[in-house]
Length: 247
Length: 99
Image (cartoon, rainbow over all chains, first blue to last red; front, side, top):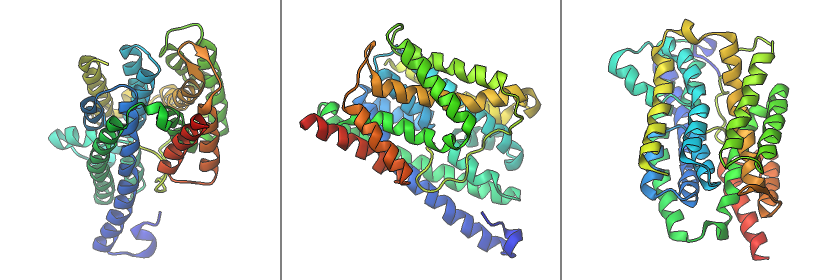
């Protein structure tokens, strides 16, 4: 991503370019709130619950995970715990973004809700505070608005369809998780972690109640993180191409 | 899913975001914390893929969902958009079940 310093853009022109790029990411990401809406209802959540998740939880991987564990018949607490574990990466994004954005008080409290993969990616690469703020805000707010609108559309459509299995919506959940995982598989160490975690989870399916296998696989992450010695920096997601990532 | 658990999960996810924005960086900026946090999404998403595709209650089965996952892999290799990956996979499973 070119910066103003690279090509001598004036601030108004740099700002409009950041806004344009951020809106592109926002529209592409927000639109697939439709798939969360459909999947949420297919998992057995009500339309209101599905929409509440997009409004209040607003972090896509956690939302899909909660719906996925509920769909598999897992206990509500397992579903919530899985969603929370996936939400921990937002804490690390916050550590990176807080000094860049420089907000305090109510602005920080409000900004936290739109702290997600994409808003971090579109903000963290900037070389000035005002540019970081424009990228973060434009991306975060546009995704928030569209993600919620799209969730409602998907949930209403899903609710009117009848048995979700007829439409293969249960199979769509696995595909959604794979698409979320995909960009992280560039890292060879992550591929090892992924295979090990999937193996642990499948091994536990016959032995434990639904929901537990996925949580136990989180232990693989704990082990891999504690044992690996490579001093890699926190993985801030790449500024997404329109297809990658979710809130 | 009860509303209470759902709202608690939402509150927890928000507090995780706010903590990152509000807690002094040095409290969490430990290499081991970072490495673990980096691996958590990978491990959980991979486990979720596996369970979503192969689990039926507490048994493992191979059915139309595996073909749908195969479609997703090909679509991702071809850099298809997210919605094509997800709804294409649904379509594959739906068509197989019709057959």
